[in-house]
Length: 388
Image (cartoon, rainbow, N blue to C red; front, side, top):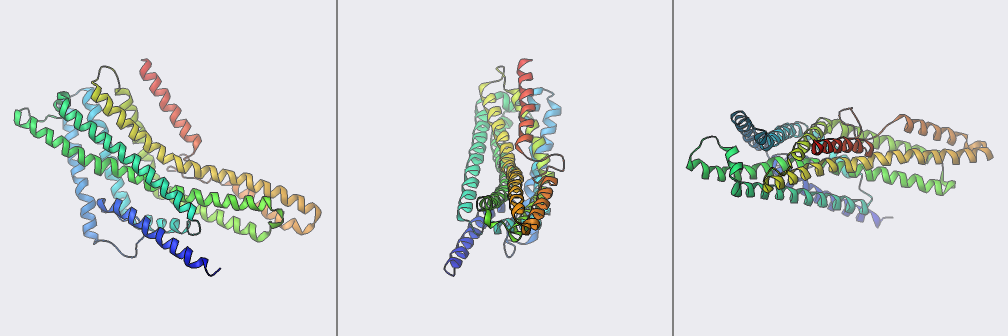
């Protein structure tokens, strides 16, 4: 027993350093510190400056987009500058929500970090999940930037939509400005929103694995019926209540952002899909398709681990029903099992009364059912658009 303690401590220490370093590198570019550290990385004024400066530029971009839309009242202009305007607004709101709730995020991150203490397999799975998702997000962002470069270089129409003053000098200067603006949008808007969604998905994944471990422990008790005791049932119930409380915390801290993400991403996706038509140049259609794929992937990342978390909580209802049947069978042979039967019944009532999962501002839970409902609505819209 003593030989396992240093190993677990060493594993936990390596895991903590690894993931703290990972999230520090991702969020420090944006002046945020959402991981748990013993002390602040930089002074508060410096963090405010790093958070605010890109958002000031975002406001200037929004003003420019409004001027372009007002000057050229064409649907094509709205299709090009409308989605960036919405994403800039979402990124500004997201940055200030994350900065305002920085301590709450750090405290929640520390709690979730402790849930993976005793399982090396869990940490490996979480790591694979994070790095795979990050790679896909980065690849899609790179594809979006490449498509913007191709439009700026090859398509005169794209540059005409971005003109504010018509002259030859402005034409060449605008090409440079478009490329710089594309870099800014890629790093401080698209990628920033991507890693925020990834951070949410990471928390859901940790909690999903914790619920899965609880289900496996309950399954072991079902297989080994002699191991069913009041003490174990109390432990299971306390673990369930603790994990449910963490799920509620995640819902509260992310709900305003999740609602904004889903509404904004789905609206822009529908706008992009509507614009993929033969009358547009191939480079425009390529850009619209890549951007739509990026948005739909972020929606999938939001739903994936949170849906699996909800599924694990639903499996618990089946597990406790099996425990209840086992305790009733044993109670028929011995009255000493009456307290276990009552305990199982109370646990079952608690599970049936609760609907544990990640809530989006109290409107609905992120689950497979809600994802399919959203997907069917969007697909219906797509079919109607291309039939009209």
